Image (tube, rainbow, N blue to C red; front, side, top):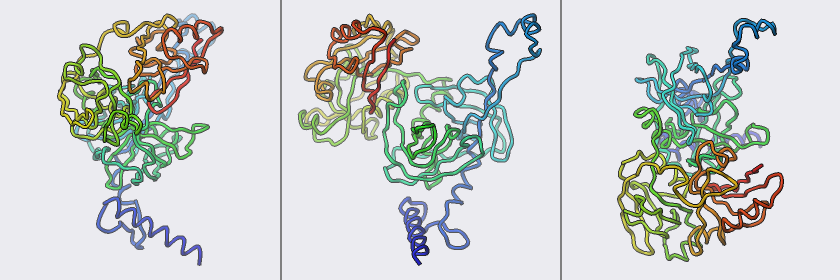
Length: 456
């Protein structure tokens, strides 16, 4: 009796979930009258594909092995072998043009990419463009007989919404799992910083990368991207790139072949209850401007330190990582509209995104121990100072492939400790780093996470 009652409660709960999600006035049921996800799954799975890549073998990567004499001397085969491996998943989002969205890390360093459809057709794919900052890549396959998935509005997601993850975990074949949205606006998982992840407990495992996260309307709301687990397996913490971010990347890549990022010229932090009280702001969520760069579009538009940005283009802004990601996907020259609170006064400010600045050396102070990186000291009384309860260093810029870049530092990192000892000025950083022998650790804030970088 207990078993049957438990099952009845489970079925009832599932039925209520369908109604709450707005799939229909009545829950979808099978021929036996039991709730089922099958109609939604059958509709969307043809648009989710398996991606395999062909890479160079170690022999091909070494120029010595291209020498025929060298190959004969070591009795190596005349033709080096290439390695094909199942890399992940992808989602067809435009059947007419054959566009497939996947993760950048899925196709990174691939010489050739093959897409396998649900009906087992295997098609070669051309790389249209890729954006490491959001971990999104766009492929193109030959149109014809393709099924595309509808792209939904990820901004409407709420914690607790039901979602379905579809992909190719461990290369075993297309797999469907379900769960809920566990959190929104997660960031700090990668060094690039253009993140606004959806967190879900739907099972995501290696090979699911690039697959679809859909809602109960059968709409794409995310591209599965990352997991946190002790051994690379699922422990109920998976992350997906929001569909609105993926759509913005797709639009730019389809137009330019790349994402062309500009700048607004502000440093920012999350609005906290303490900061809101101190600055006399009534908003519960938003982003506080910590600094405005001289000569930037932000300064020219009249934005000021301590202004609170609550919306961009009419869409609410919940966190600094979210705003940073959205601004990072706004094309250079495009006009934006910001809703801003200055104390109790609400303002609408319009400005345009400018071209990126030059090398990092043009901004802030150089760090001798870490060539290629410039920092700005956090001023007393700024929102960042309030958040950290003291000073620190904001990374103003890092030149790509410099020593600082290769060590792992990125723009907008907030440095506050060396070898676990608090540093608040550049002089204190230099003293702590210069006195360390054999390397030192730097602790910083990146998005929502504390990150430790070991410098040797």
